[in-house]
Image (tube, rainbow, N blue to C red; front, side, top):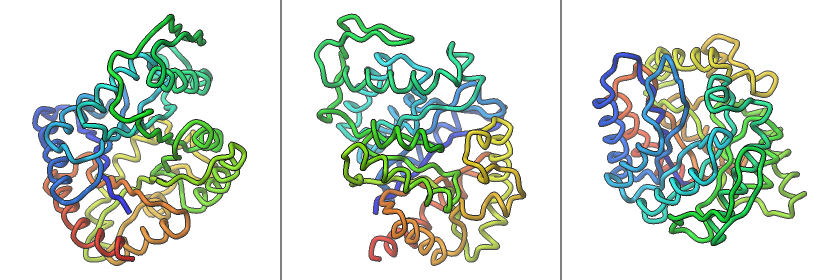
Length: 336
């Protein structure tokens, strides 16, 4: 079992982002010291009411301060970007981290982002597939010619090839069945999202397995999942300490429309207890250990990324969580 840390880096307006960036870099350095395997960084644009350091600049700095960690841009919103830009940026990042990049890719869901980048949600599926296909070709061919719906590669080449050959592993994050089938067809693995409930994931896992069979592909060696996590003396204390920050975060996600693109029954429509149940890993160390083992045994998850630092939470509390999880949870899960 591998463990990673997902850095959201979502901070209130008015915060000094130089201070917050340093805190996020300190978290990466501490993660390396504590035996975490990877650091992930999300991406959104026009993210009011959050301030948000973008993923590639942040991960470039992580490559310098925590060189043992795998790096995951989780996820690059491919419909918003040109493939040559993506290929060269991520190729450069794979060089910086000495071949430890994971290419996390996603489709996005926010109209404000689609509009700002000159596209629409309706176009996002075809654009995603065109972009990913082109990035793969740019990483594996000397020169690429490709006419797509929103770009043209005319004898184009990627000037900064990744260290990993033929390319870094591709993880596609997906909420919906169409995206999960796309992950089976176009990626090395499905990156299971932090929002869907366990029963939904069980149904979707069958979709994923059937899609792999249809493609003639085996079940992946690495199956990653992200979950929000908080460990305390007991579940009640974990809820008390985490609720203010996590509840505020998911209210904003609901305002952004995140739950509108999720499967029926998984919307963020209830109170915090309803939101938390079957989504978040909360409780004592033993309770969280058992929850992780259930995910491993039921679905084959063998890479867990934890979200443990949310808007308004002191960095010191997040650091305490990182250490507690590494000392109390890692050894028990790995030995089991």
